[in-house]
Image 1: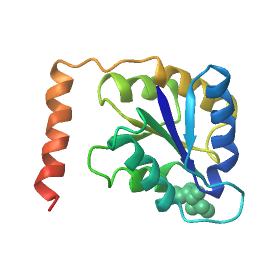
Image 2 (image 1 turned 60 degrees about the vertical axis):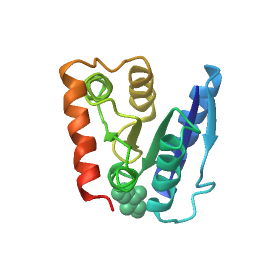
Image 3 (image 1 turned 90 degrees about the vertical axis):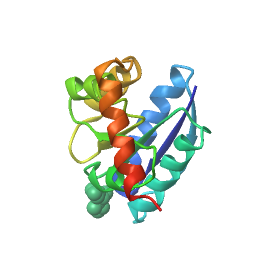
Amino acid sequence: MKIALGSDHGGYNLKNAIKKHLEEKGIECEDFGTNSSESVDYPEFGMKVAEAVVSGKCEKGIVCCGTGIGISISANKVPGVRCAVVSDTFSAAMSREHNNANVLALGERVIGVGLALKIVDVWFNTEFAGGRHERRVDKITDIEKKYSK
Ligand code: RB5
């Protein structure tokens, strides 16, 4: 399993903490930047992580910015990505179990590192339930198809 990581400057420290956490668990990460606290634009990094996931290069992705919002909106523009902004462990589990989220977004200015790492663990340890949720996720894909040219 290889995980794509990306952030802007607002999520840079959290991305680094997540990378260390995952690597300590033996999970391989590919870091798509940013590589410093210098101000950058989050869409670039949301897109890179999203593309790595939909291409199959990475199995899942984690993106961080100040709130998790801008970078999640950006990632979700790439067809095939289901990126969930999460600030609690219940939503982390549900985003996997019900929504089959393949990218997790976290806000460095919203939650502490301890909670963020717990969310990451819950997110990785929760499987998609399928069944009626499969039908609903398929309907999300139908919306993508309707609007993609
Ligand atoms: C950067 O200042 C900030 O706007 C960004 O990290 C993020 O919070 C946007 O959604």
